[in-house]
Length: 233
Image 1 (spheres, rainbow, N blue to C red):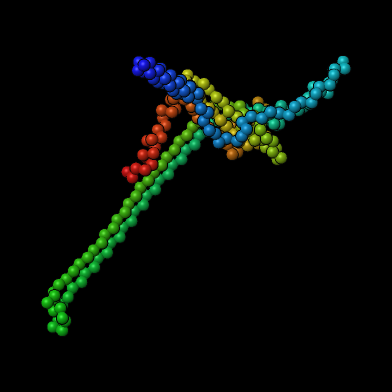
Image 2 (cartoon, rainbow, N blue to C red):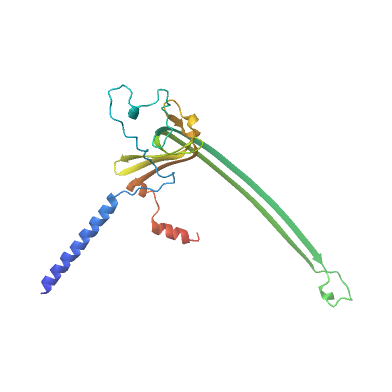
């Protein structure tokens, strides 16, 4: 009887162990999508085209007609624009400060028979305080972002500007790389090739994020972060 109970216990433990390993493997294989701050949604579906009229044998068909001199550049919701990422920023800052302060105090008692403390005659005291402070700080940052991404017009503003947003995902080995972009484009800045420079986009939001075990290895663990937050040193 004891052997049967022991065998059942071993089988149960083995089952739960395998289930736990499968759950961990499933969680590890499912790469989470990193959060984003770009304008949402990142794509838009254009309005449905009007139903085409039946062909009547003529060359001109109203349902499939397009203006001969109509601009082919993006100007409607659902159109796409290619953004050339040419971001380059550089900033430097330095500061120096120094202060100094000093003070001194001297005093003494002279001989006098009228004082009750005449025995302290000739006693002198001196006190002095010196204080100095100096501080220095410097900071520098250089950022370069180049490439291309094609985004979708998600809103056409009343003044003619276009709100665009889009995402590009690259699957590399066991990780995913996400390039996201959004901003407001002035239709005047769109070239004949339907492209625009990222430096000409207002309220631009550019992201380059990744997911996978390589990126997770660069993140401090939650327990380490906990002790770092409460550590006084």
